[in-house]
Image (cartoon, rainbow, N blue to C red; front, side, top):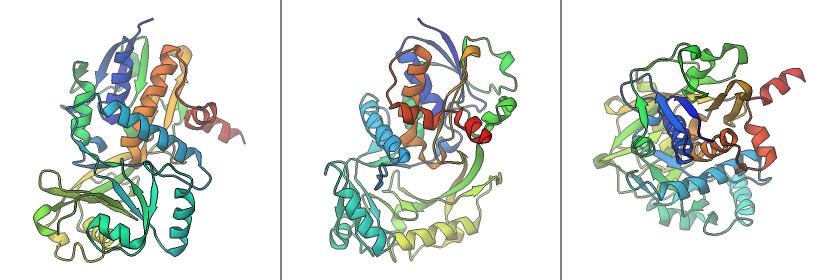
Length: 349
């Protein structure tokens, strides 16, 4: 049965949830405090879209795999979203990690993840690298604002609408998808979402050699989109300073040099532009998705941290199924692992 549902937040979390609910016939209204969508962490110029397998196939790895596969399926229906499946190279940290990557890749389908030697990795990158690593042929980059716009197309989005009290909203259900600001709206639930400040450095394409894939190690670098590569990113908890800092750029360039030695040697951190945003961080690196109080029609999709692009679509699908009373798209242990109720359980232990 169709319900009236208010979604608070028009970033990647809110847009994904709103799209999934609208696809099921619900009457969805999105309330956004800013004057346009994707003004928070979802406003970065380019984001990385790739999974992260593990030796024990952890809950995080399984959820990222589900999000990666669901995202590919969904994005194919959104031609307005700007993205590129260039492949992504995840270079090992050291010889021990390289050996672990080989063992993990041996159990993965080759079109999902395969291990490549240092020589093969260097050839894929078009630049010498220190170790081999994982190659994700279906991974790549996304321009998050275009994805958010595509998800919100045709929906009722109300901008310049800061919600301070949930009682002001007239809807059968309310979904909190407003990032690190969500806990303030429901203080009784003591949601452990904290702001993670991050700066992404914008590297002019003309200042670096050609590079056409996504590469990650302790940081990441993307292909040039509109003449800009994105390299990053810094991370500081509970730091709400929105101004870029020279030290942030220095840190990002150090990560870039570990990733692609010498690639950014011509870059001067004092001349770089960049963008600061505040990611909603959860204490266990898993998102927080599900009912806060189903009987009161109160739900949440958040806590995505730095993996919002991969988490968003599968978390939206999960929440839309929960609200609609449909079979869930994830195994029961993963549903429990992302449930907001898990923190109450931990508090009692």
